[in-house]
Image 1 (tube, rainbow, N blue to C red):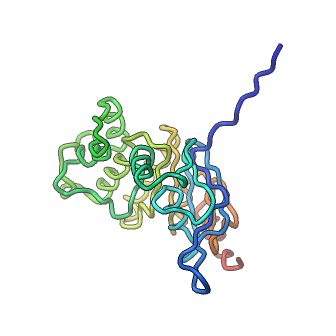
Image 2: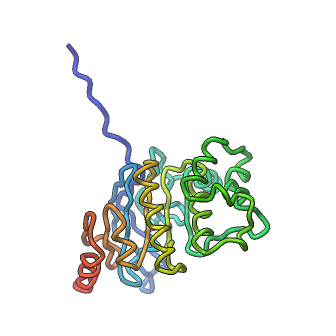
Length: 250
């Protein structure tokens, strides 16, 4: 009887020896130094590090918003670092969700129109069942006809999260998603991101400077001087804060 060999599951996000340099010659700045990372589907990962450690550069390279100087970035089974600009734009629109700190909602559009905007730009209609599910999951089922000006900051961030989910992306990237929110609303958004990973199986990658925010993640990765220098699994906020105090040693 033959033995079937199963291939390992494809990681949702994979970086292989990724470097990023800005400028050239003696004035060049290396923001990322040979990053290797694989994140499974359904994981909620936080990335922390001091100012200038490379957090934003990492997030932008992983999400396809910036091109690495060398190395490969994979989303699912696609090497996005090899795509030409137009192809990358189309791929990112269909396969990447991004949650900005500033929400980036269009004030003239309703909640539902803001959520489905990526589909409109792609010339696709929304799946009514999935749209109902997403808006319900983020607590916006009764607010779909409102404008952003009629919403609280937390509700606007929920719209941004729903917009990031509506295309069923390979991964959702969040850049300081609670930075402009009060602590109570921030907790609600973080709980939503965690439920998104746990209940929807969505891969979430979040950059944050806040140990409390990081403690909601399954794993916290620490960056220093453009390289990962450690991690904690399911840590408390105090454990994250304690770890951050030692990053200066790197």
